[in-house]
Image 1 (cartoon, protein in one colour):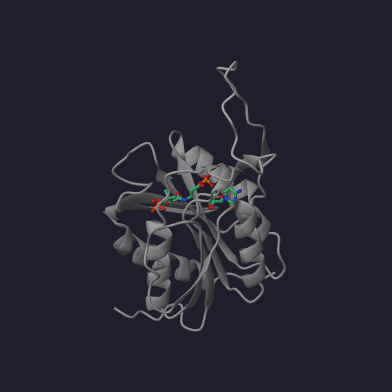
Image 2 (spheres, protein in one colour):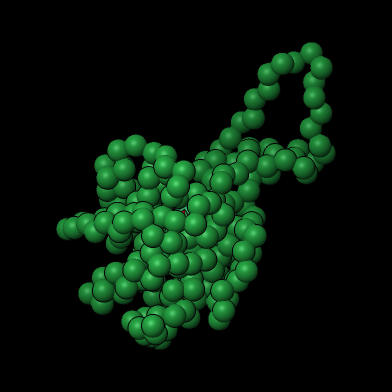
Length: 224
Ligand code: PMT
């Protein structure tokens, strides 16, 4: 149903994985499909928002009425987010951004060294896009995701505080039936004074419930 709870609001969402190049034919990445972030984009449109979806490499159709910006690496994603954040009311970081990238990207395909059974690739930390958004002025209402395999509540609350954001949506990605690449998800949302659990459902249905919760919290948010 068209709730209109985000009528007139501008929402930026990141989705999918990032790819961090090693050489012209290889990269580091993860199993994010983009399904959760794309479902959030569709739900935010349904709630009346104008939505920009900054998407890492995903094989998904763009939801109707969503402005999609395709990116590859974490640095590309940060650049695209910085170009669209100025007039944004709500930012949702659903992308599985690679925490590290290779220090050097080989210009030519790397060759197997016949006399070496091991090789090492030196990595450097990527910028934290979510934490960076939360330091912008004016700050949008900022929602993060936390993909955890253990001590979900503890690590999610830690990220909420450390990144200085308003809500964090935690999923247990040790369970293959939810989280990365599955059609379903189950999450608990944390904020400084509370939490709310959502049982397993399709990512589309969960996204609608998350958008409703985000809109409720956004009502009491004062931009700084
Ligand atoms: O795409 P699907 O297959 O549908 O799977 C959905 C999902 C499991 C990817 C999604 O629900 C999810 O949990 N997304 C966050 C994945 C993640 O990278 O979590 P994290 O705990 O490492 O990161 C915490 C938060 O910081 C996230 O909001 C992330 O977008 C953000 N981040 C992390 C690192 C970084 N360099 N920049 C960031 O913005």
